[in-house]
Amino acid sequence: MADHLPLANYDELPAGTLQHRIRALTEPQLRELIDYEQEQGGRTRVLELLRARLDEVVAGAEPSGGNQDVTPEVSGGRGGSPVREATAAEPGTPLRHGQSDQTASRGRP
Image 1 (cartoon, rainbow, N blue to C red):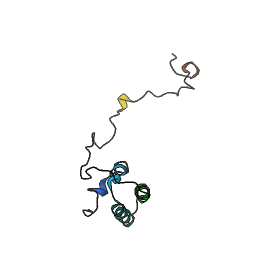
Image 2 (tube, rainbow, N blue to C red; image 1 turned 30 degrees about the vertical axis):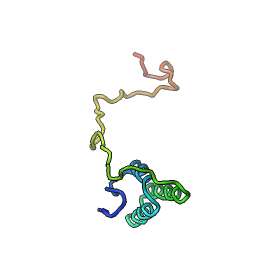
Image 3 (cartoon, one colour; image 1 turned 45 degrees about the horizontal axis):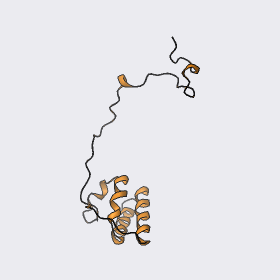
Image 4 (cartoon, rainbow, N blue to C red; image 1 turned 45 degrees about the vertical axis):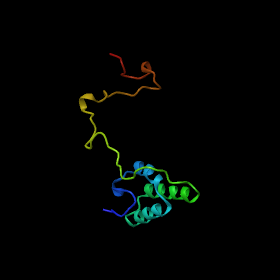
C-alpha cells in the first residue's frame, strides 16, 4: 500500500472518484501521483486525468478545498445483478421502429 501518497487509499480509488478528489491537490502532489502511477503499471485513464489536472494547475487553476481522507460510502454490494430469469424480459422479436403491428409475433395470437 502506498501510505505516503497525498490521497488515502489511492490504489483503490476508481477513476470517477479520483477525478473529483485530485482537484484539491497541488502541482507537486499531482506530479507525485503521476510518477507513482507510471511506476505501478500506468492505468491509462488515471494518467489522463492526472495529467489534465496538472495542466490546469500549471495554467493557473487553484486547488479546491475539501478533506481528501474522507471516503464516500458505497451503496449496494458486489456480486451481480438482482435480475433473475423469472423477471427477465420475454423473448421475442424487437419492435420495428416502435410499431407493434408491424412486428411479427408481437401481441398476436
